[in-house]
Image: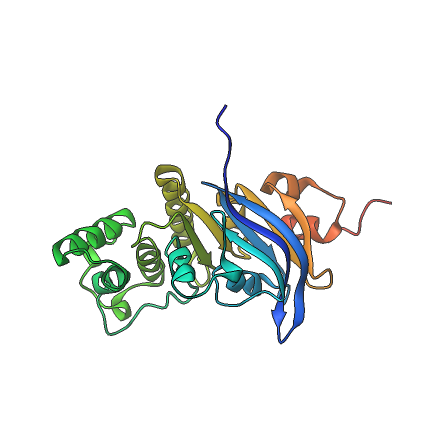
Length: 255
């Protein structure tokens, strides 16, 4: 029986700003190849956790382990080497407006590899094909729809063939059909390429469509209040807050 490997391990993490924790003493693992979703209400620490997991912020204490290496303690070349194992697509897309879609995807390859230009072009073209944007390669971000911008951001996040991709609110601002198409893209990339996805979202339809496992953060708890599959959390009445979130109802608990 093949052993399931860990892609990310969070150990006793205290995270916040100016040494004031928003998240206290959380630990969890993300397994290789799964679609792992982080959810919770406003101000619960979802974005803070994401920023720590991608190395934008340092923990107050605790560890962020990426493929067995401690990102929280890494500096300089060691940190850059670890960061090249991950890709990030931000909520806004964060595409450079003065560049074409193709040039946006090529940027990391130019910056971090010594590959010939023709090879870089071929790799970027392949990434755009994977997200269905090859016909838009020479358009500027301003000429793209919202869904196309999200796809372009995912293509750019895949440029260096990362093992892990982080998506921040990928369905935000999209209509239901475009959102469903993006969900299908994520699950297809995870299953066909074995990419591990970590996704921060509050879109219930997407959560149920794409998640292998979920953690739910809650502001007053300063941590994780539920872990499981969408079905497990939807049917678990042990925590009314979790049950209400997944069922869009008001349930005050068993009497």
